[in-house]
Image 1: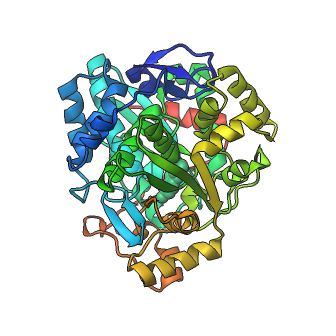
Image 2: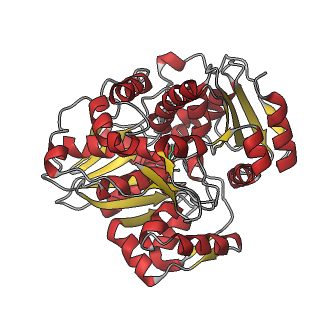
Length: 462
Ligand SMILES: *Cc1c(COP(=O)(O)O)cnc(C)c1O
């Protein structure tokens, strides 16, 4: 499979090249030249298989040519062996026709482990084969950073630098980033918000001297390999509820649009997904856009679901690419307008988006109330992000199509909000119970491109 940029001005790459590069040189995001389709029989045959086997069958057409078949199977096996649940992504019933897809059984207790653990193994195999090394820089609103650190810690060919907004991540999130002792792990607390971290990262990728000098690689949700790994659990969940013979819908707590975009690809691959529902907190640019109000930046407002506190959703560019009929020039123009505040979506593109997506927005009070009511009515303690999803899902639930809400993090990652809402204290799984005792290692740093680049140059391969 070859990969092209959403802005149409970067060279076509193989899967391996697109994965190692992250952001395209024209500023765009990589996508496969065509979306592979699975037949209804191939989808039906996934029912009852182990998660790893479903992962192989779903992802293989995207990676073939870059990895061998048995090599890729071994990579998948190593990626998910550290998960705390044999089903990897178990489904739980909440209510009639409403199910919770638990994506928090990985090493950092959030869904990002699904993609990041796989990427760590893919990078290791690809870099060893090339005799190369890279510097991974990521920006995180909380969960990406720890997931990247867990995936790359201790590897020889990789340094990991994670930028996170100082004081704006939960204590568990921060400790998961600052307590790994491996020398190739570097946690940077930036004086700014998540959008500042994300902007600094983009600027580093656009500084070609720096980018080539440190062999910069990105594993943020713009990396296509991350999107790819997330397609798998849409298939595993849907077939366990009767797909392809029965349609299903998904509600996804959304920030950067990476997770739900994987659902869109699953649908385009032939999985009978009825609706893909975008659930946002008070940072609702996506809900406003899908409601027809255009895509205009606001200020980021800190919330109790911090991993969704974004001003713009970087992966939405991929959805726009398809909504605009795969016209890279049109996407490039929209992204230019976004620099000056935003843009209106054309009528044709709006219709294309509405064929797949619905949306809803949840306030802070509603999030807290949903945590409490979910505990009361379904005996499940959920994290604030998941609660945002459950609330929006209830508003979009129908009687004939099962709704699956993605549970994106374990409640113990956000103990303060969960306890405030429900009175119940969510304990950490026993394998992490000493997190609060481990020493922290972190550098506080100014939100300034030169300072950040200089720091990274000086701390590579220490
Ligand atoms: C990252 C994250 C999200 C948002 O996912 P996107 O792919 O950015 O839309 C939601 N919930 C949690 C817990 C997360 O870590």
